[in-house]
Image 1 (cartoon, rainbow, N blue to C red):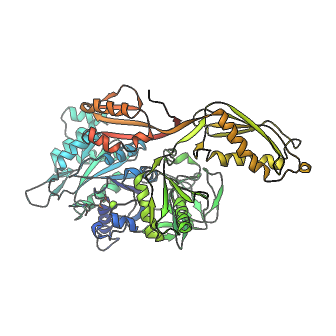
Image 2: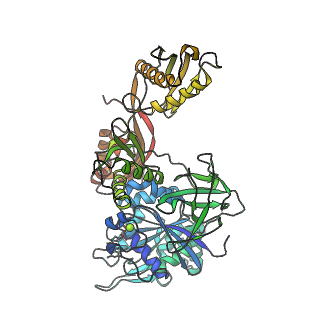
Image 3: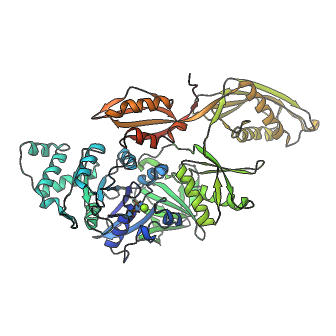
Length: 627
Ligand code: GDP
Ligand code: MG
């Protein structure tokens, strides 16, 4: 490992809490930039994409590096919108610690809760920065209590904010403020027996001792120190930097171990080509040496490697070491979320997500179809949650995607990067089909060719996908050359069944067939015959409609329980009696995605902004008929 200590951190926040502003101030305080950029003026270093400048929000993870008291702090700027949750999760995985920014005016928002849940799930040590103390209506002490209620009882202040009328707030460190010490002590006591003993016996403790305990428990992700400030003016910012190096852990890996790394971002530059952003947890990645992509099973090679150097500048390097974040060039088939080496050191590597919404996209200029398709294919390569399909016959481009904001971002990127103006149709949920029973069909094809084929379709349990089996072997019935084609053709046609929907959770059995060159069999024959027989068999089996279903958690204060109950019944949810969780109720169960993807604002209204919804894709299930 390099001698210089390192921190790989993320700054997380709900939109507008001040994440970008804080990042700018951290860069400024550490001397990377001479004047802090202003989001409102479109000059910030991290919001570099055109889209972000216009919208003033950060949608793509961008990394920056600064140096503070001989420690290298690398900040991965993470997106803050709920629709980009998978990206939030992906970047969280690359982190050793996080700073959560909460505005002392707007307070804890739904998005704050969602980020908090993800951080806790992955066990990422977290500091909290309470921002915008300068604003009218800022209530830092009330916010602290709210956070203790809504996020965790293990949240405690590291400072006291003294606010005289019309004056800049003053921030007093914990070591100079007895009352704040007592608050911290109370919180630590719940996690540490010795401290509990002292607290119960009203014994004083010295600051150094307490500091040591804060350090240990914060690194373990058990307690969460809170800092206060004004990101806009830089007040409290150096204290946050001290906090990061004092209380958040550095990377733990060792170069001597086997490679374990994860790709958290892919970009395609006009000049640079494909840039694969990677976090190395264990082992090393060397230039021009083979890299095993565990997800694809393929071998890749980096022809060039960059490491984050200073600010947003990268430097060439021959190796990425354990704990490093860098960019690889020359990788062809490696995508976001893929694991390089093996996944043993990567926290929580698999959240299966697939795009569940679809819309048509078309160029405003009627003739730019090719340009649009090419541009979309490039964006698809960068973001696996985007899926592009060109329907030749209908002359339509269908886009599968994850959320509505993602769609808007795509539109903006098409314009800023490719100078294309595109329009979208209203998004629809993607349904699939599965056979309702067994269906068998066969034909003897004699129409200018010669091929016999008999197929049987069988349903498989939910989540099985596609299986194929052949009951005939050898060359005596169907030539090997044609036999090999059949499953490939089936795979292609079942992706878009007769109704246009994917047919899944099925097995296709090749029951029988016959062909012969001397009777006139041609290579195209099975390409014609296979879809016909498949569709005939499918008509016999019949199909059932499948819809995406989500596992959900909803947590609300008790008094809103009955309203949520009614909402859930309306949404066709399957759920158990809610469980009590302090003063809150926890509902868990399953609900169709079609009902949840627009539920967030409803929940907000039903719970006066205090409900937390968390959903996770759990698969495609038969649509249950309601009554
Ligand atoms: P992000 O969406 O979390 O990246 O938030 P931004 O950094 O883009 O800030 C959102 C808005 O809040 C911008 O208009 C900022 O100028 C403003 N802002 C950020 N920090 C402060 C602060 O400490 N005080 C005040 N008054 N405004 C702030
Ligand atoms: Mg921002």
